[in-house]
Image (cartoon, rainbow, N blue to C red):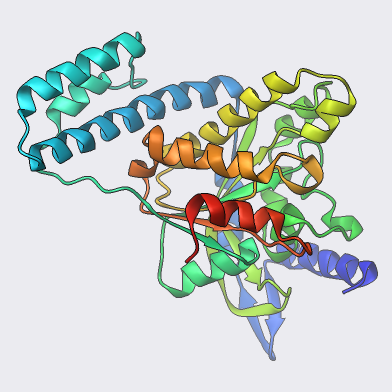
Length: 334
């Protein structure tokens, strides 16, 4: 598909969003109500609010991980009371302030939950396909509460999809009503445009139940599907190096932003996530590092216990397949 055709697809998508309908095999498919709701309920999440939620769900993930470890010890026949006390003391030394914002402490939450409720971590798989394909597969399986991470431009709504570019965000924007929800949230773009650092900011846009009406080949669907989308910019590591910014700090910020994404999905009630090689490609974050950071957050930090399913959609057209191989090395193959 050439650039001209991609631009035409983008213009058609704009028209479908504005009209709230499209013609499919001689019949009109109306999604105007769902589109309007998605736009009206989309919201800008400031860094201040985001970091509050991150603190809350970091504590919740840690508490869930501790509970699961206690359950495993009980299953192994160890002294549950002494073991739990020791672990709570250890956790208190590491987490001086262990708070669930606007709620009870992590320790109180741990003690108040039924001890016999078995915890389980999310299933994780790597799919060598476009994000839109994964969204459609989940919809076909009847999966609800789906959250999708948009590897977003910090400065331009929809990335460059109107100009015919076609990376991950552009594919999402060309296939759905996402772009209109982003236009409703200008503060995200204004702030990042005025930020000199190529690490950008923790500003985010959460767009609930975005209407997807094209498949991964940009063919129209007989019936649209919905999935919520989190617009959050990765650190542009290549530009960080080029401009002489602090590379070590940029990696710390990148890891925190990935954790922020998980916290925002958890706060929004999403249970099935579509993630991927966030910030790799043109932003030049190392795929193996990114995969390992996801794994650390999901497994070591306990975030996997807050979700049911994680799919890493990694579309890798390169000859070396370096990116998808990195994720398969870290998470295994299906």
